[in-house]
Length: 204
Image 1 (tube, rainbow, N blue to C red):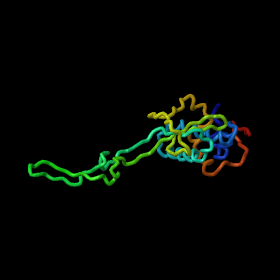
Image 2 (image 1 turned 60 degrees about the vertical axis):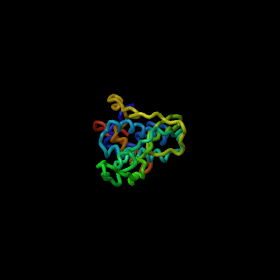
Image 3 (image 1 turned 30 degrees about the horizontal axis):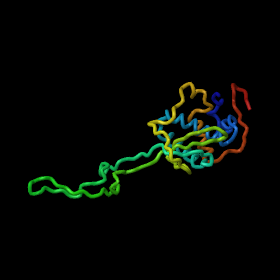
């Protein structure tokens, strides 16, 4: 597989049709695009780019639960309460007794209701099967059904493309993301003719 010729001059619909031509269905093309961007974004540290992709990824996951074969919990992430430092209680009053010893009374922390946890979120593993092709994506989006068996809890999930692998991709991250956001929010475009300019000539 090689880079789509003149991809940077293409409109979003043209990018989609060039990408779609490499796959057997719209669903498979979208899943492959999400998979590709998911690996590419791991080495992109632009906050807006990452936020833009994960918005699309989560929407795709929500809308394609029909292809879900298994959903599992990967881990539960908790952030301790800053008010009580995770202890669940705070000093309400304090004093020194007759022997000049420090005394105190504690109340339940009102910020976390005594749990010691400020926030909590669950990371899930979604396993899809699209035209016999398996896809696995991690997301904070809850699957429609969750197995009792937990998924592996890793510090990092998936691996980025190598430099050589990235050069062989049909589109770079910017092109894949442009296409994904167009299809996600505008819908799959009608078939069009894709024209590419090559050294003064025209290839249709």
